[in-house]
Length: 111
Image (cartoon, rainbow, N blue to C red; front, side):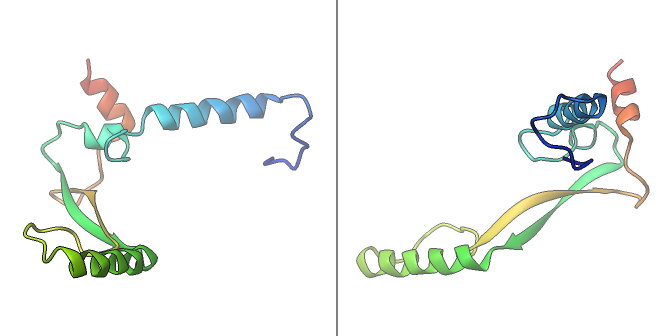
C-alpha cells in the first residue's frame, strides 16, 4: 500500500517490517490509557500527568436530548458527571518541562 502495490501481490520484506512495527506499537501501548507504556508505567519521579478534556459536540447534542427526556420523567441528577459530550483523559507531562524518558530508559529500568 505504501509503495502503491496491489494487495494481492506477494509480501515484500517491507510488508513484514511494517507488520512487525505495528505489532510493537500495539504491544507497547497501554491498554488502560493509550499512552506509550514507557511513559505511563515509568517510575521516574519527573513524569507526572495532568487531566485534559476534549468535547464531541455531536455527542453533546445527543446526550442533552437524552437528558431532557430523562428530566421530564425522573428529576435532577445528584452526582457530578462530565458535561454532555465531554471526555476526560490523562496527558503526560514532565515536572521540570524536560524530555520524557525514552523507550530504552524504560526497558533498562526493568533490569
